[in-house]
Length: 457
Ligand code: F6P
Image (cartoon, rainbow, N blue to C red; front, top):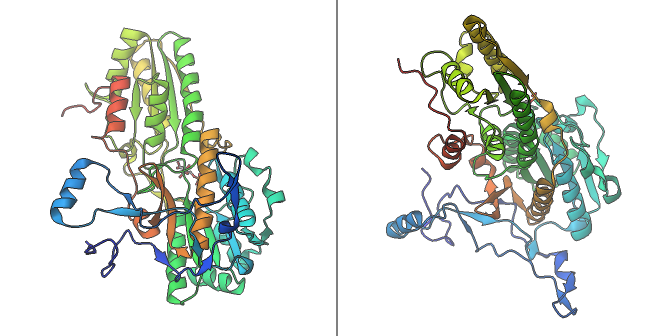
């Protein structure tokens, strides 16, 4: 465990919550020159600057406060995100690059747009470059040209899903990436992506530090899976849940429309069941929710098939929501395949369940009507909904402010309702998971009435 500092102002020792900085910010922010309408219509100076000493507590409970107070240690806290009065970079000299990497996610274009508009209009940065297809765009061998991003170019992009910059998976040589940043004279790199992208961003920031360069690397956490550590919400997640909720509604309608009707929905969520759990909660139609974090059996007296049969006998229809990473124990012995980012490619639990349910009813000799829906990429290619659009707009603004202030190797997160700076190393140290003893899962159990699905041996 890293040693804590004795007071929040004396950073004598390494503190894992401390955000790296390229150097002291000495330049007056151009935002100081802005004004806005006062309550009586008068013009008042824009003063929405963030005071770094107003740190955001990691744990907002009284218990934690008392524990820290008794120990004499300052509580764990994040640096607040937001515009600084003094900035590090001279805006007229800045060359900023933006890349999107990993799987698609609703809101990517919204974040790009927000970054460009904030850099251009608030800081008057003229050189904003779009890097095509993730980290590939920095590697000369791929030959992807850079795109000059302007307010006009990005003005309509938030209407569409996907990313105007394109994306890719896969590791690139960190040395080559930093060589390119040097060659291009870039001083800011925004990396919009999930776990893999953030790992890449951290490696790039470390290499920049080794070379003693002054290039800021700022991550913006993206993933429909919402599985990034120390980030209470990643953008795209809410849109994914909203689209998934509609799919569950369809499955319920189908299940109601036939004798012994079963609607089975498989939702994305590689290693975390946040989309499945939250969408099931939103609809309230699901009777069984299966997620990677909670074990279940298919056969046996307490297993899914017996419980499903009980439900069909009592109510005549049922809806099952399964996250793609659930039940992978049923594929033991199968070849383990990885994607270009090194993630395990999960076997199709939806198909396996559909076949098991059909076999079960065939054996029973009883009619059962199963409708299996796998919305797959339909969910994450959707444009962001209004809630995610607002969120993405904030994230882009906060990321621009962080970079201009010379912060580096951090991502913009939301924690206890505040936007904060999270050192990337902390965010990638583990994956966020649904806590089987926590509030979300308990609420799913209450809402569905789902019993434990494990057969006692
Ligand atoms: O991480 C987001 C995600 O949508 C996962 O839920 C899913 O497993 C994965 O990406 C699939 O990505 P792709 O098919 O693009 O590699």
